[in-house]
Amino acid sequence: MKTTQRLDKLLAHAGFGTRSEIKKLVKIGAVAVGGKAVKDSGLQVDPGQDVITVHGERVVYREFIYIMLNKPQGVVSATEDTRDRTVLDLLDDEYRHFQPFPVGRLDKDTEGLLLLTNDGKLAHNLLSPRKHVPKTYYAEVEGIVDESDIRAFAAGVTLDDGYETMPAKLVILAAGDPALGKPSKIELTIMEGKFHQVKRMFQAVGKKVVFLKRMSMGSLLLDEYLAAGQYRELTEAELAGLLQDHEGKK
Image 1 (cartoon, helix red, strand yellow):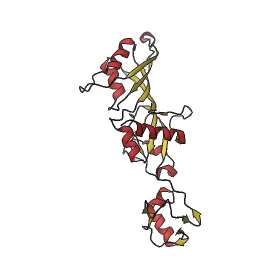
Image 2 (spheres, one colour):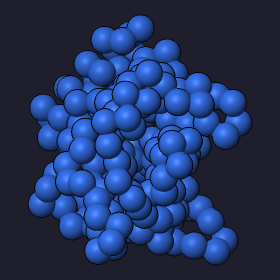
Image 3 (tube, rainbow, N blue to C red):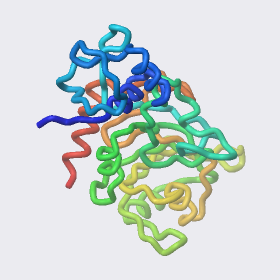
Image 4 (cartoon, rainbow, N blue to C red):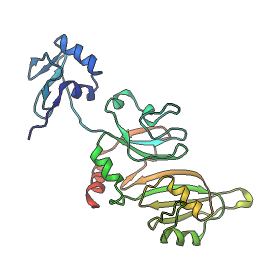
């Protein structure tokens, strides 16, 4: 089955400029399809079959991109914002022209793993409540987190709006010491993505999260070599794992 799309859209996704800039390239005869210069930037082409060149250079086309970002604090998980920097502001132009968007959200003051893509189908499936894709967070919590919290989270806690969470796995990495001002250090794996969920779960047991970082989403683990604000494309193995997360949990 042939899959066609507008030539100007394809070239914009491939990084050859805006649609108006591509129109100028077409006007000067710089764009060819099947070896013949085209006159219409809105021409329907099949990227899987047609040989497309710009100034004689063959266009290597990709429809989707998948980027792992270590989101820093102070940046919002949005495509645009009038007050704050967004996660898209961290990307180079070569990625921004694909018009990616964040898969889910991390709070402005939360760090860690954020997937950016323009693959709407994958994003929808990873975020679907029916898929129950696990997400693991590292957190520092005021006070002492103990076995009673582990049991409460395993049973599910009731949030401030009355919602009862699914069972979650809480692991205590280091006990807190309030006398010394040392927070408890924990890992928490949840199967949902409610608004401020991790913070609200600890509020439900009378505790406050003072630092939060997402470490994984499904099979995708945050690259430990990515500093806050850095990003890279997913490897083939990482993408295959995400696609399995997407397909495997109906």
